[in-house]
Image (cartoon, helix red, strand yellow):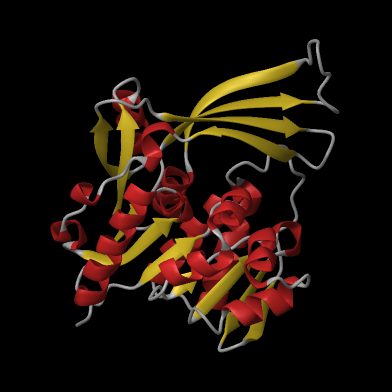
Length: 291
């Protein structure tokens, strides 16, 4: 069975980002000057918004939020061209991420994460009808880091398999992957067709220090691996070998938060528009530079 729709469905986290940009190391025990902004975020939401921004005709997002900011997130997602379906958690608040960005260190960032409602997905939040008209399903890797949302992932994968809908996944966090365990992660993603890890995630998942070797090895588990390399572009691997190295678009980093999600969103939009993986990775690199 092959999918008959044209929409992208993203299932993933919707969180509130508090981004603090500072210069140099934090000063323990006293003040560190910073510019602080509150923004809508979350890997799932970011991917969906970038896919819409890069021309995907219809992008849907299934997320779980708290009552505290459900209306705000729905409004912001809609303004970005996304059709949100937000489950309002009766107990937990919307997840919050404090993002510390050192502008003197290549805009590298450190996350403090309170997942809140975003990891309280339940299999009951999933119905097969969510795939009506959907040509591709994308899952945020954060869904694998709690038992209830793992059950939702299993239900979504079963539905997608039955309908012939291809599935992509972004591992999301090297830190959480370490806690989950590599073998368990690889077992949980059985059946996906595209994996989009970062350099660190690819190396962690394979135990190999070289990103090219890591991408090649992962492509023996997943049909297509697109490994995001930041300023080094992206690697595209199939059947145990890297067959394309896509250069990055030069950019002076101000804040790298969400750049990987932008890559993923643009990559998926390009795939749905008929691009091949290498061309789609080029679109991803352009979006990552913009982000």
